Image 1 (spheres, rainbow, N blue to C red):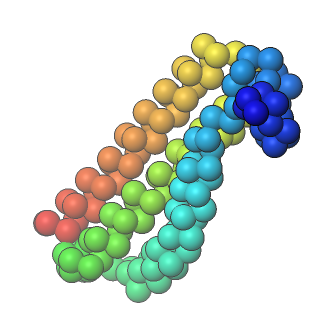
Image 2 (tube, one colour):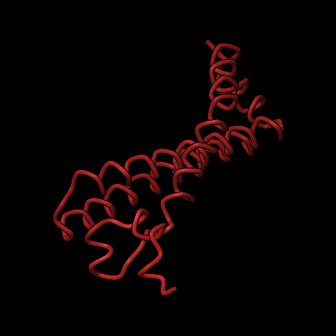
Amino acid sequence: MSKDNNPSIHIMRSQLGRVRGLGAAKTGAAHWWAERITSVALLPLSLYFVVSVIVLRGADHAAMASYMGEPWNTVLFLALIATLFSHLSMGLQVVIEDYVREDTKRIFTLLVVKGGIAILALASAISVLKLAFS
C-alpha cells in the first residue's frame, strides 16, 4: 500500500499538506517540551530568587557581593537568568509566529525580540558575575 493510500496519514495531515505532499514538521513537539521543562525549572528558581531578595533586603554592596560570592548562589542566579530568558524567548517566538502574518515583518520582529532578549540576558549575567567576583 502506498503511503498516500494509508488512511492514518490522511488523518494527520491538513488538506493543504496533502495537496503539497507535506506532513507535520515535527519540530513543534521539541519546542513545546522545552517550554514545559523551562517553566517547571522556573518554579524553584523563582522561589529561590524571592527568598534571596527577602534575605538581602536592605543589604549594602558588600553584603550583596559576599552573598553572590558563594558559588551556589552564583550558579543558581545564572541558572535563573538562562532559564528565564530562554523561556521568555520561546514564548514570545510562539506569539510572534502566531500573530504576525507577513513573513518579512515576522522575521524582523523575531530578530529584534531575540536580539533584545540576548542583550538583557547577557547584561543580567554580567551583573551577577561582577557581584560574584568583586
